[in-house]
Length: 167
Image (cartoon, rainbow, N blue to C red):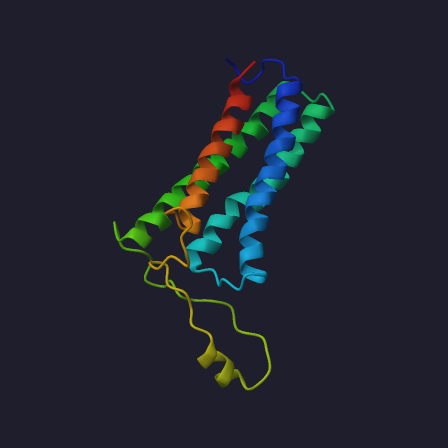
């Protein structure tokens, strides 16, 4: 299979699905942060970057496929989306390993944005406890947020790579 093989409905639908799915994954993380009150650690924030980049890339792939741009353009964009999700998979595995104590995390983990609220800055700083990268904020069905990111990234990478390489 070459990247110049013609594209069709599969690539168009897949690009649209991936744009929505990536936005849903990162939107869920943002919801847990802003609605649920979970303060993300440094590694949590890094895991969002492939999604922040991936959504616009998949929207470009969708436009490219829908507008019948040269097939190589759509396939390269889908391939880039797959590679971004493989990067997200790596980041999730790394963070999960840190949480389970398989390896050491970054030494600077625990740095968060300054709090916003009433009272003096020193009082606010005393109330905020920066999260540590080696402690999972919570687990659902045995997996932390990082673990679920591994699952989501693996599925999205497989979908993107299949569409990039399939006729």
